[in-house]
Amino acid sequence: MNRILLISFGAALGANARYWIGVWAAKHFGVAFPYGTFFVNVTGSLALGFLVSLTSERIPITPEVRLLLAVGFLGAYTTFSSFAVESLILAQNSGNWHALLNIFANNTAGLACALAGVWLARLVA
Image 1: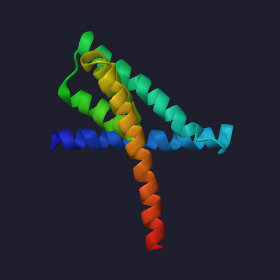
Image 2: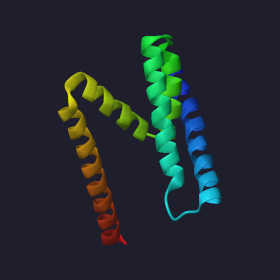
Image 3: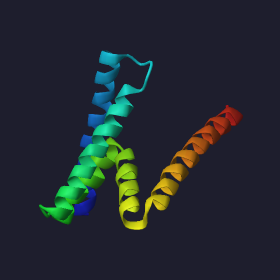
């Protein structure tokens, strides 16, 4: 139960950070391009890459702190960071082919499913 609370607390903070950054970006840069999402994805990828590398190579942290920061906060802040770091890990451990396959599969399936969701919603409405 303690782990669920840690993840939930981190997620609440991450989701709110994502929201407020989106509001800030729209106010300062407009809405013609999804600047908020772009900024969140880039900074989340930087933060998760830094956290994973630092805590696995130099400064060990407890599993609970990892859950709070990586799964909770950054997971709610952006899942793109997980995708980016997992793709890098695949490239390092399994070769570029696996990383490229992951990138292609996630983007293709994600866009196809978004299109399918739009199509399904139009059928229902």
